[in-house]
Image (cartoon, rainbow, N blue to C red):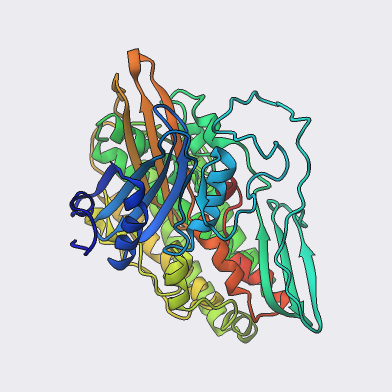
Length: 516
């Protein structure tokens, strides 16, 4: 990859390799971002670090050849770095989060409002730079008024929804500017489920922190635990067994199907088709119950561990898993035909909440929602690791970018995941399911990158092994919802307010994985 104006060192960094890490200078920070964009790459994650030997801001980019992890150390007392929003709009909220947690700010950024700090701690307090005790109160903290963007004009009014919602749902505030029922603008306010995960990570032993990683977003526990395990295994220069990688993939595909079944039912319900909800809920419940029987937990939490998996499966388990795949495939095929032929459902789905391929590319829409808008990215196809490199995953894509397209991608992915599960079970290698990890007695780092059911889960891990005292110096867990939440604001424009629950569910983004 040769980009005019890019230093020879950065040219080398963008060479065909799976993962690179390097420290760069202020002068190259925006240059590298531009080079990635011009080469068709995208921003994967952006985070700050305040651990020794100094403060830095990091960015991970996806190129055709893999992940480029660039670290920008900030000299002396400097706390600012060049703004990446003009290159990658998805960086905006990530940069605001870096400012809240570390005090490092993007110079010249148009939006400098607080994001995660809702007034729970003082404006001059930065959780990743100052020690915090569990349950610590800040008497000087004050609730903050958030400056929502106002839309002016005849007949324009605002509808405030949340952060508390009906039913069992995480908190998020949505401010609609509307004329009649037509939405002119939506602005989100998230961060209500901020839990201090990144600071807590530094307080846990590296071999135990996978349990917290698997709880960043509970519906993606397998993907997060695998990404953390991958990062730790890379830092320890340890390869897991072929059997362990197959069992991880088996669980990951079961996690994907469980979430798709739940969403397909909920989407039917949001279109006033309760039959769909009842049928898909039944299938999902049966799916989760068998996961509990085979793996010991309905969501398979704590089943992916450093070095492999927590337990093995036997021939009886394989038979039950295969039989369930046959049942689910038959029933989902029938239900898809029902959805496709139901005029009322299709009237609600088609043309609703559209995101054009051009807008999706500009804003960095990723994962399932991205593939519904012609963004053909799927790690299982683009950068397949074991065992996906031999499974030949067929990517599900659509172009219309509406609710109907996101539903179609879910159906297609259910059938493909069922095929993958059968292949994994038919050719499950022999061997151990867990390797013992020997952590190095020196500083090391690793990255984990897994295609979860929503999209790419990324974990950047830095370890300090000085004097044999192994600890986590920094662990950043990134959910694809960071990229996709802002796109939801665009998807609702021009639609009516009552369609928002349907559009929102068609994305089904994570609050917890976003708020950290």
